[in-house]
Image 1 (tube, one colour):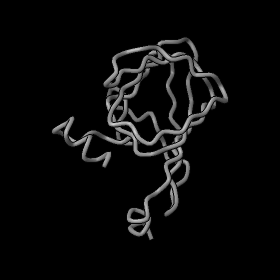
Image 2 (tube, rainbow, N blue to C red):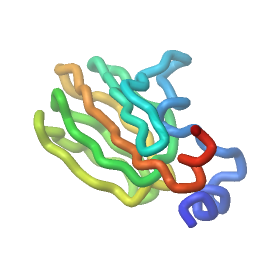
Image 3 (tube, rainbow, N blue to C red):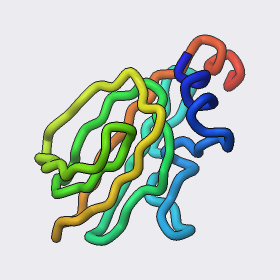
Image 4 (cartoon, helix red, strand yellow):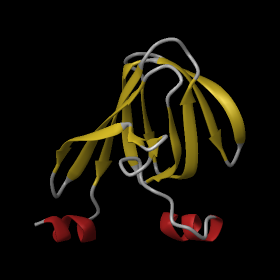
Length: 122
């Protein structure tokens, strides 16, 4: 269902968080990937962002917090991300972020795999 929403909103497919970067450079790296899940570590120095991308269902955990400017279909707003904070999301059709603070923000994204996708990784 989320992929249908994404396709309807954006004729060009958006990258996922690993594929999306900032000014041609990656911001996320794979820490672990298997048939059950993928774990990404995303690092944003001050002034570094994440180009427009989508998220499948995931869990996020802030290893190092800071101030991020988030733009999505609801507009643009700033978010204070506290170290150790966490969240769960059913997915995001699109958003983009920029570190507008003076600390490096680092967070983990844990994406569970669907049964269909997991079967393809065996």
